[in-house]
Length: 343
Image (tube, rainbow, N blue to C red; front, side):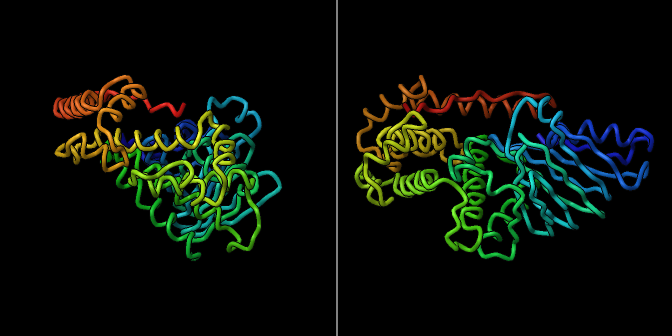
């Protein structure tokens, strides 16, 4: 649900206090100062899809400081991504400083202090990214913090364009579509940062994390093939099955269990997707690499505590409840199906 906050109708003496309160909730707890005093004007639109938070804002010249005290009083620790839409942003974290221009984006770590200043009127989009899912793709993020990627780079332009379109579309996404878009957004962000320095050979994350990400990409690209086996997936990633299992053991899984987990997740999303309601359950299962329907049903029940048919019915009931709630100008929370376990 999109929420909009603006200082336009707030009394000038109350604008800064009001803004600090709403902006902290939208992005991350921080202190705030405006270069224009009581003339401060700003607007922020907040929303989310899957585990990704979105805050699109516009303001006059201002400065944001996230102190050690702010960090200590925060309840969560997402990775923050700032995409500059217009104007200029100046960022500082640890011993690194950066300037971000229109189309550029960079990462900030909410677990450590940072500062952001906008010397003039600016527009930007802030994203709160799930740390675990981003680190699964990139490994240790320390070397990537406060290093802007410009839209002019061949790879950098892809996530820049993709992310800039999201705020205007997030409100219309259903749960299943939001989940898919979150995966695509995280993949594009990871791709851009993994290619930083033009692929010059600079290692920006641990070799194990890079190899694990490559293995997962190989598996994802081949899920629909019934003959995808651990040995084939490991070979395509250029590693042994033993090493692949060692990498995935950090997540409490193995290559065989991970393949099953991803296939089940793909099937679950398809079953929850209203646009695929016309497809038979068996068709969906076979499309994602299962070759035996009874085996698929047993595995699905074990992972989610319900049959594939129950999953589809529950998603449809949730969609109906949400539709009825909107029709009655009320609110309704769709039922949520838990994610499959990888173990």
